[in-house]
Image 1 (cartoon, helix red, strand yellow):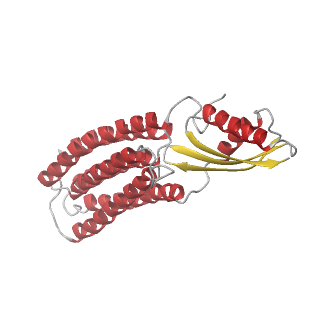
Image 2 (spheres, rainbow, N blue to C red):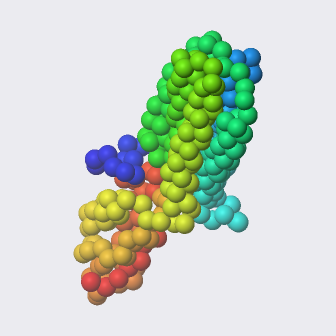
Image 3 (cartoon, one colour):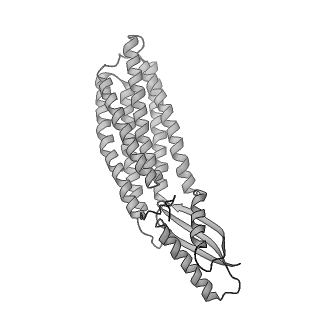
Length: 301
């Protein structure tokens, strides 16, 4: 069976959750340390762009905590009140992360405008060293987190990765703004603050691209059509199945649920149709470990 969008490589949802924890926990430590470093450097070096960058990193700490909680909760087994499991916690965490980005972007934009209108000193040159290091670290964290999020198909982990990318962008823009202010000299102190304002716009843009897919998943939008086609292919390989009709797939966190209509010979006894339905279900569950429930409805061919 070839690899597929529903991971025919044997990965179980519990394994995927464990993989998702690693970049999130690493991001918590990195964001906390860098946030403290950037804010301290920004205060000492008279750079609001760097202070704003540090505030955005603290927002990243909050978002990583939310993603971690969402991943843990989504892995909880089904219970009486949640017969479909707790998978929706994963895209819900991603939506909250996106909203945190919105809050960070709006806050930075408002304060940037205030700083532009308020005379202040030129930023110190040593702030550039800190920003260069931050850009390298955060861009590395983005690639690591995004790769894991893509591998395990986690909306929340990918949203957390984009927080790292937003941080790298704000740091890069702060570097440009401070460099411009230092190069042009007195009278151009606001270049630092204009960089922070531009960074706020980029953060809001990234927030939109994180909230949209999360809401898409929360509203039970259909996953890629290739998934349903693969389910049909497996079902049609079962002896006694003449064809398939409707096939609905929904994604719940790291799991998929399938509703499938299978056509069999019209004159078959009920017992035989029931047996074929069970074989179809077993074949699909065996082929794709991330599909955890299959509802098979028998139709006459």
